[in-house]
Length: 204
Ligand code: GDP
Image (cartoon, rainbow, N blue to C red):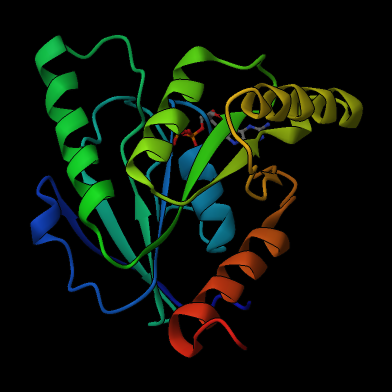
């Protein structure tokens, strides 16, 4: 898929105020500092579309972008940031839970995982929650350039193996680097496929 346009639309705390669900939508989420803004900018061929985290935990909004006037990209706040208060965390949880459970046009949530780390309980817990809600997701490993290829592959495999302990079906996952533009074609190709399903039905 070629990115012809990428435009910021609106930021909300209330899912009900989000744009009319008239296009397929893809949300990006992960722990603070996982590389979410960098990945979004890399996908959209822009440098400043999503704000990279000078101030983690501050962007507590559901941020909508429209891509090619054809699909919505949603930048969700990072989870697991230690310095927010318990109250803020609860509010954040409610906001995200409402959005994820109610957004009718949500085709997939891309859950970003730092490819340098061992499987983290917080990430696995978040996936478990998505499963309970029946929200479709894909795992996206980030910062692949920071390790050797074999280390990245090993960490990704460890994470998937951990998922296999709980999940019967493991959805497609992606290995990416915002610096090397790795995984861009694959991720955009996948979005393209799902867009076709949304607009034309399954039998395309
Ligand atoms: P966010 O908080 O999840 O939005 O993370 P950012 O996109 O702001 O990235 C956090 C830090 O990781 C920044 O210093 C980025 O430059 C760095 N980073 C993000 N993606 C990559 C990547 O693919 N490779 C490398 N080497 N660094 C990255």
